[in-house]
Image 1 (tube, rainbow, N blue to C red):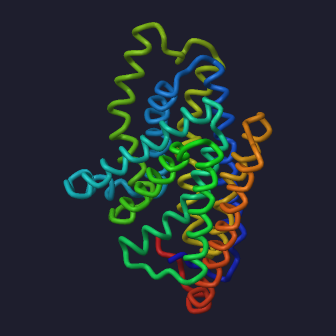
Image 2 (cartoon, rainbow, N blue to C red; image 1 turned 180 degrees about the vertical axis):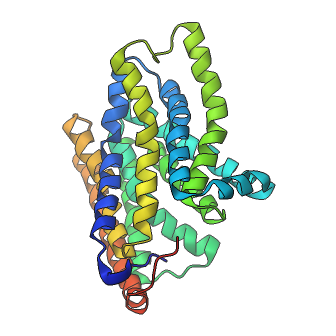
Image 3 (cartoon, rainbow, N blue to C red; image 1 turned 90 degrees about the vertical axis):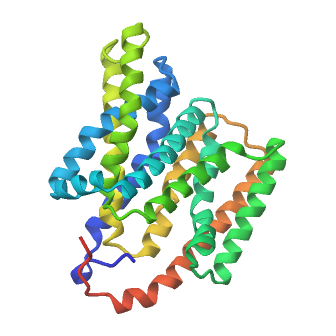
Length: 309
């Protein structure tokens, strides 16, 4: 459980969390800029896995977790779980990059609004976590929102559900892995980089790769590393130092930014589609209120407890 920092000054952690979600919020524009330069989603994904490795390794070194990385690499069970989480997050990244470059930013926003509510349901089904009445109301509102969206787009919002399920599955797997966020991220990037590097090398040798083709293209591809690793590390650091209720509200910054981007770029936003978002937003508000209610007793009991490192 998240605990506030000693002395109650959580402003740096709150700032870190806000920066994290703001980065995630503008990522669609980053991938779109890369797409406009002619990069395919596969090339962006491959470079993302490759250039995230040195950034993730740097954070491991700064945290002094080299021994933990070595221990994980020797533990076949933990390594297997992290391989599975790698595949799930790669699927999530790939779908997301393709969607934002295919005029489906609103669908990605819907997916990430649904994700925490899906996580609540998964916690009850898999980890026997309790859901109160507000939790059930939040989930019900999300279900209605998805149903209305299905009517609005003439079928299930596959992209939204795929993003929510893949990221939700990733969270479930990572919950079972005994490894810190920095260590886990580095191992995941190493697993994916084996395939990503091979694809990048093939693209470059075939003359269709964009690495080194121009300064803007190279800069954007190299920036994939920080855009991948930095927000995840900021989130991990902030999550142990600010109340759960704060994170519950802040985690909707990302999809809200995506929603604004999608509308601003002229994606179809019919009244029926707007109604679906109203239900989703209602579920998000109820979810945040429920998180606030759950966190209050625990915060009072742990007000001066040092966060675990």
